[in-house]
Image (cartoon, rainbow, N blue to C red; front, side, top):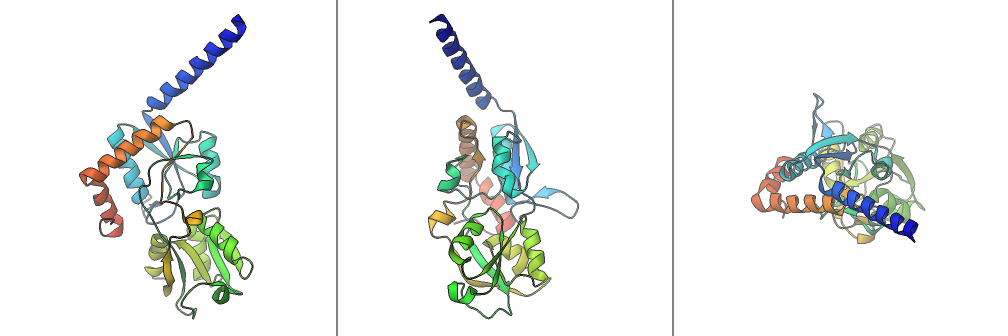
Length: 258
């Protein structure tokens, strides 16, 4: 009985220590996949910037912790969190049920539609099984866009998967892809606004079904780090209330989010 009691008390002590650790963060490491302009990327002189970066730094400042950004390729970003390589992920990660089984999300901080982009020479007005038949589609590996295209169009089209959005855009410019499926702001920045080709939006932007496109972007934490997630939620609400969020949003998207 004494042995069992000792083990129980030890377990309570460990749990209490873990809880205290969650409350006492003063240095938060945040995993991010680079580049993904305008959300997270490096300027020509190597400075890390983007909407996620500026908002994340503002959140850390409001909470009173030091932020450290840790670069990690997308297909390993959740395993990196689980392995404690960083304490959170803030990298345009869509909140959906599949990811909720692995991580704890903050409140959504932005909602982004997905969209199809192609050279202007591709003579189609919308993307469907008929118009995509025989085409080569580019997606970033492990993203919701990858899941959506794989489930809905891999039976009629060839799907090429890339580690980064930049690699995908390079293959589009080299005419090795017919069409790509991306978060709309990424496609706008890397293709529609590009000086290296003439690209167009195909059809309307897409936000449904929620099974794929989720509930907006959120910051991901380990499931047990509820206290840390709540601190970020409180700071996000404060930034939205005092106008700081709108200032950061306008810096990258031109106007306040409605």
